[in-house]
Length: 57
Image (tube, rainbow, N blue to C red; front, side, top):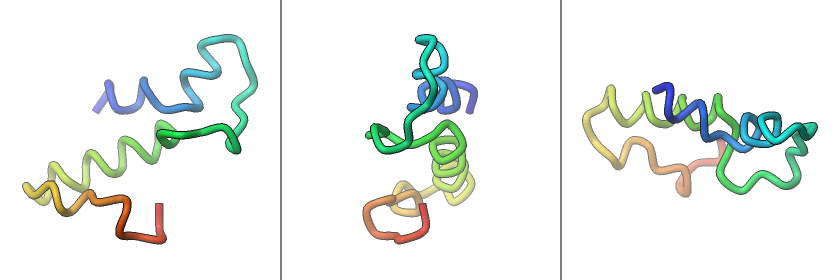
């Protein structure tokens, strides 16, 4: 879970000394990545974390 949070676009931009700019995000925020990882883990099924099939990221 920590790894998912550490590689969110917002965290990476902050770590580089920048202000996070959501319009440049390509892999999601730390919160989004952690949420979707947890969703798949809890379901025990990778299909549960299919972010391409939802409008609610």
